[in-house]
Amino acid sequence: MAVSRTFVRGLLTRQMAKSSNAHVHLPVISVPCSLAHGACSSSNAIAGPSSLLGAMSDAARPFSSTPISFKGKEASAGEHASIDPSIKQPYPASELEQRQKSDLGHATVGRVESKAKRSLASFNMQGKVCVVTGAARGLGNLIARTFIESGADRLAILDLDAKQSQDAAEDVLKWFEENGQVFEGEIEVQGWGVNVADEESVARTMQDIRRKWGSIDVLVNSAGIVENYPAEEYPTPNIKKLFDINITGSYFVAREAAKIMLQDQRPGSIVLIASMSASVVNVPQAQSPYNASKAAVVQLAKSLAVEWATRGIRVNTLSPGYMATALTKQVLEQSPSGKELKAKWEAYTPMGRMGDPQDLKGAVVYLASDASAFTTGQDIIVDGGYTAI
Image (cartoon, rainbow, N blue to C red; front, side, top):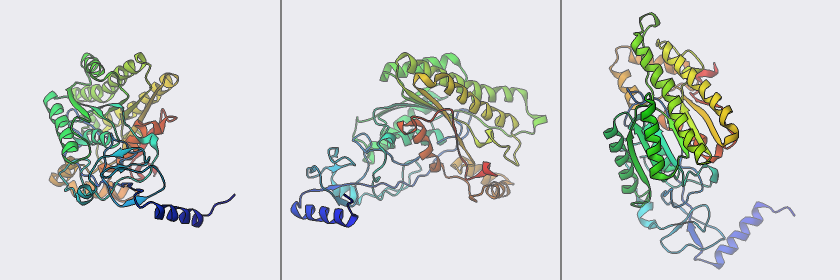
């Protein structure tokens, strides 16, 4: 029998009239994002992605908003049901509905209006052990924070400098606890120092993470560097260093994480951060070795994806376009030709602007989560249409 929307609406209205106590809050969150640090340094490369997704459980503690009534299991006073009314979040409604967040320069900070509407449960990253390299700052740090937003409760922040990594981990943990998104002790975030171009350093760090949290579910390699030299003037030592970090480092990190996943017979997702430079020659800057290194990363991911496809490991790449990170903005502002360069980048981009770091959040959560269970060997390009022309 066909049931009209009017009939259903009337049925729900009558049901709500019968029980004035059957009100639960279905929050909805919209979190504008800003980034405090830039994308590329001696240890950090490009990367980063999206919204608070998933069937919001206790691990992804978002904020409340407008109460929505529906027929279902009642929530106790002072608790908020998520998508599933049986999942409750003990937050005082009055406190959280009034809470406003100022932009502190972090990936997840912004004006909180409400909590995420219903979304696919497969985007939820609750219970996953996530490892992100190049994550002490920049887009790697954005990715790390995004995983916590999406429900992950164990996060490893890796970067070249151990102290910077641990400081970043403490900052992430402090922010999420102080801003009410998680309870104290609910999530674990730890920093490790690692040189991705050093085989022993990578292997040792991955095993340390395994000993601490049991295994690894998600790996994102965001470590990398970029330099600009005319091809005929590019210093040979610089080329070797760039290839060691961008290509060999990607291989070492993916291989050591995969070893753990295979040994534990645990399905996992590996995301290597590439670049639109893997697919096109972006101009006007001269960066031939960098472009070649990112093309190699894309092909490496495809090859590993095929090799591990039947063993439960998915491997994909995320290729950002021009991203307006804080470091990029600073470089453009300080360079004599910065305004001209920015204008050219935007002119060559069909959407007419540089990407905001938060534009990458959705893509990385998709690739890292179970939502992409049948996606492997793919390069997801987020570039405002740059490579389409």
